[in-house]
Length: 621
Image (cartoon, rainbow, N blue to C red):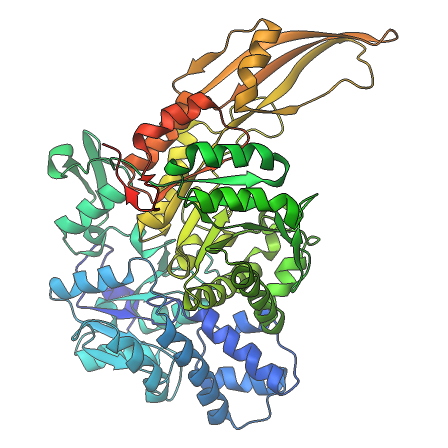
């Protein structure tokens, strides 16, 4: 009999939900990959991210065979499996990396009286650890790799789970994250939803592909949950006069009105941090002394990673040059969390993090820097992944990056220090060309860090335009909040600068004529006055702009440039802080000290969490 004939339509209430584990409920694929690399290295073999991804979703014995054949691991099959399990369980006990939305959806199915089964190719002793980390009774049935004769992609695991529950596979809903697992569930006849994680699951027949469990509407799964609807509405800023959700099951539209969702008031104030570039240190010192009571942390932008173990000062920075800022921060009880940037060539840092040995050495070098110099933590700003490495490398880098952040976070937290990570924007929770810089996988690393700083600026870089349009900024905030479970870990980067563009030229300009230049917030008023321009604030952009003509003549060449300046003014700074307050984020971080103006701090002061002379946080009335 064709299982497609009896399969229920999308939206029908399932008789049971069958769950894959690794990569679907818990993001343990990086743990498995690390354990594989360690085991292969022990036997002097060779392993790669490509090989690691090729075994995702396979039965552990099949994985062990690949490690024997391709990795040179000279051990019996079961011995290899147990060595891998030991490594993964040890990491799991230190931190449980839940996938976004998994626990909530599990709880929702139980509340609606729908049985759950765990269907995993991991062995029982690891599955038991995951089951124990969830509320008792979450799973009615557990099928593991050591329970079946044929592992995924064979349909046996899913068919066995359905049989143990006393239901037909065609009436079950299965969640999977890998092509191997999807093939198993589809072959068993289950209605299957693919939620890609470590490896992509291309669109295909017989299953539905979604980017995240939190993107699912339970109503479309045949599950009704007013609380879930309320949470989704709140998380995605879709509290509007009428909000439509499409019910796949009924083909109808239903609405949630504003009255159904209790509004959440904005935060009265929030922490303000700031970067201090090495080229503006003198100005930064002055600002810390004057405005330290409004600042939570200062991040001196003065370290760079030259290789796995060498972290050096950037530019002309020396211990002597750094001392005044450290003294100012100490005097004003402002935390010091320096920033490290990636100064390696394209692919260099990605290679360092891909190798467990060099990654471990890099973690040790950073931890030693923090501890030896008495810093409060570190801020990692590795932008080469996004702006220097080919996009084709991102999936490999993402896995290594997640492992690095997890290891560094554990090391710093054990020492009582903080880990902050700075990332470029994302625009949704997917991994497409439209998703932004998903290589940093903010949803996965969130559990390992104290804060994620999002650089919500540099919108226009190749042609005249705004620095960070407000709606664009809101899109970024929404995407990051959707990816990160704890909104208070999200810190919004706020620009205090602009750009001065040449929009047209008449004549022949001298060779010394400038093209696009950057301009600091504290410079724009003087520039506008000097050129006789009148700045105009655009409420829709949350920015200001002005234009002017500049005549240039060196006695040989003459031209007239038409120039246009776009910048985030004081009102724009406050608007972005208010967005962070409305979204109840963990704070804002200013780029940067030395670019700021007196009037900007006047705008910030009423909504900044303040500190008294003892360093105690207080709330501005």
